[in-house]
Image (cartoon, rainbow, N blue to C red; front, side):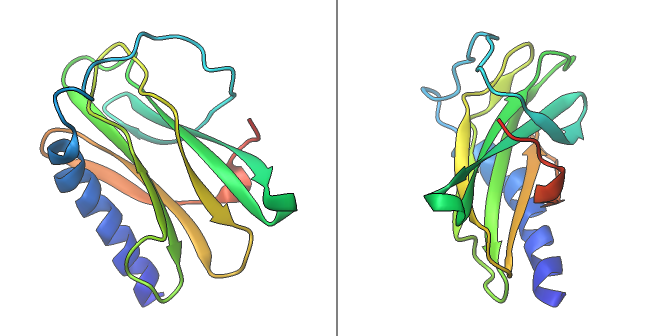
Length: 147
């Protein structure tokens, strides 16, 4: 439980601090709002920005490929970034991660993905970050719909 608490704190800090700094000017160009062909389940919201995820079984059923996308169509102002992390129990650093570039209001981010093994001890976490704040935490994979 102590490691999970540290992991959640790590996600929140990474979203709030690293995500805004990590986006380069070239990758920060907004993506026109267009359908991706996937059905996303909203798992995190912040100031009307939505982190949507969906899953596909891979590796002959041994893992999930979890896709993520940030939707800022209803955001009033600012730029946001989304993150997904896969943590292994007892390990502080994520085993897999995805981070969207900073996205302006009115658009979608590009779709990214992480691989989540269907083994005990692996958890999915995600969050949304703005210019100087963020929100994040664990994501229950059972709540996530298939793509």
